Amino acid sequence: MDAITLAHQSAIWVGDLEVRPATRTLVRDGREEVVEPRVMKVLVALLQANGAVVARDDLIASCWDGRIVGDDAVNRIMSRLRRLSEGMGAGLFSVETINRVGYRLRTGDRASDAEHPPAPPPIIAPDGAASAPSRRALLLGTGAVALAGVAGAALLLRPRNQAPAAIRDLMDDARSQVRQNTREGQNQGISLYRQVVERAPDYAPAWAALSLTYSLVSRYRERGESVALLARSREAAARAAALDPDAPASRVALASARPLTGNWSALEPVLRRAVTEMPADEWILSTWSALLQAVGYAAEALAVDDRIAGVVPPTPGFHYSRIRGAWYSGQMERTDQLLAEAARIYPTHYAIWFTRFYINLASARPEASIAMAADTSTRPTNIDPEEINSVVRVAEAARSPTPEAIDAVQAEWLERAKRGAGLAENAAQFLALLGRPAVAMQILNAYFFGEVFAVPELRFTVEQGTYTPVTDRLTPWIGSPMLASVHHTPEFLRLCERLGLVDFWRKRRHVADWLKR
Image (cartoon, rainbow, N blue to C red; front, side):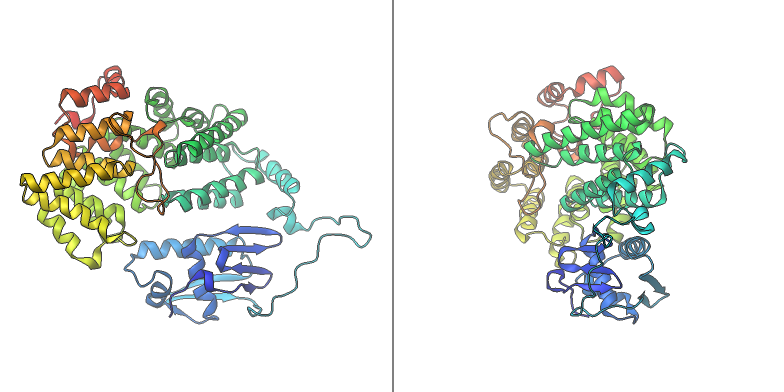
């Protein structure tokens, strides 16, 4: 099968459902839903097969551009597609798995791409008065007022934390999008949560989830957008608290609607209590893990992430979080085990690949890092080769640490630190590893306090679209073993004191894991 390019695909009709690949939207009964690109590609591939079975390998070739992907990746997309078949596609198509062969889409009558069926008539009576909405409109939301009434009435009959099935599925989809840890996924997750609160405005957990999403996303946007997102987070949290002030998620949302860095003391007791009340809630556990990582309690964060793994399927970002927890807390056997597991499922994901590269470096195995880069078949996708080459030069300097080689790396990475926050994080770690702790501290002070030079909010590239606002600089990475040479210096401890970490540790009588080594 040829690779599917969504922008080149015409609209497809399945009964009264219009599939618009170019905009990744499904339209039916006045409703519109945006789906993630991979789901749309798979849907188009199965529709184009006209009821024939599509082999799994053919599907990967056309929808994943032939990349090596694990069963989990394919299963996740098929699961999302089945949810669409039960939602927007209800009664029109279903997904059938043919064991050990592939997949088939069963559909009803489908008009050709060129012969679109007429648009449904407006709900207007012949005399010009609006007719009564259909039962489908009442159930699925053609009228916002009617839908809010139906959702509200349904919620009155349900326990406080139990959502109607349609709302629950939409919330699951929203969280799935946020888990992708991409700008597009975050935006889509926010859009889906907003749909939920529009349909069920009296459902407190949805407002809390929307608030927590705004708060999370604010940490990866430019300062102006970050401030605006936190304002929206506070509004949504206030709505959740007004509806259900005793709910743990409402309390967590209120406490989280602010920058994380420097606000650990206010958030920590709220989260600790919420975790005991709702020990299997993914949002609460994820927020708790983020706080523990931010203050250097890596082993505790790993234990929380292990609990999350029993609740939801791991994503590449989640694998990275667990690996970091094991690595930063000195659990090297566990680190190797988690790395092997992640690399088996996501061998070319950039977060997993670079983490393996850095762990090899920090473990005095620069040759292993260089060998990784030499194997171009397993290099991360969509990464500029020069970015790979820049870290290879670090590994080569670590293998042959001549003053000339280290000077060259220092000059290159000092310049890179002035181009992006993520680049500055890497630069400090590399130079500390190569025996230049004073330069590493210079970059750390620039990153957090803007001293000597300014570190931009852009993390890596404009295309990637992620930022680290100066009002909420990340702290988990300062526990990296690559920074071990600065961890016990007076300069580094002063930095931790200025950040408020020392005061936090003193009150809890528990320093960061990486200061115990």
